[in-house]
Image (cartoon, rainbow, N blue to C red):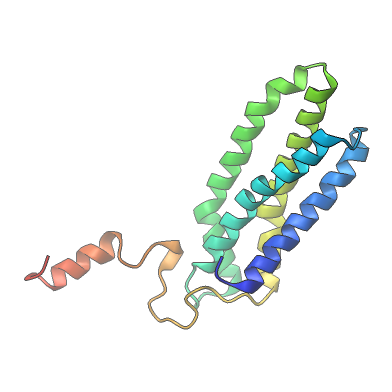
Amino acid sequence: LAKPEAVVLLCAMLAVVDFVLIGSVYWWQLQLNGLVGIMLIMATGFIVDFSAHVLHFYLLQPSFLSPDARVHAALVEIGPSVLLGAFTTMVAILPVSFATSNMSRTFFAMVFMIIVVGASVGLLLLPVLLTLLPIKPLGAASTNTPALGRPSGSGSAMAADKRARPGEG
């Protein structure tokens, strides 16, 4: 992320999720041990996966859009992929929920909470904060900011450019 305020917001989302996860250790009646510590470290990757994608796609939206419209466009574009990632990870750990060992129970509880809380923060809390906080998109100073996070030289724009200059390429 190229914007310092976006990095700060992402770190805040990480702190929120870690705070909730530490609270869930008590709620699930788990012991704070090495496995829980490893799971909290592993949570960083999941949280960044959920939140950073939404934040990145928000920053790629055109600067002429309102913050609400940028959030909407980012969620339309990347939201289904983030949600699908959360769902498939949940399906993957579901068999572990039937195990009886303490380590498996701890693993399932922590990953379950990481997925639920991380996806909720990335898809619900972060978009609300993006509409309230003044984070400018990446191309705010540029007039040719790509719409919907697509590179400016791709797809139909590139084909139209080639048609405009028939002697080249």
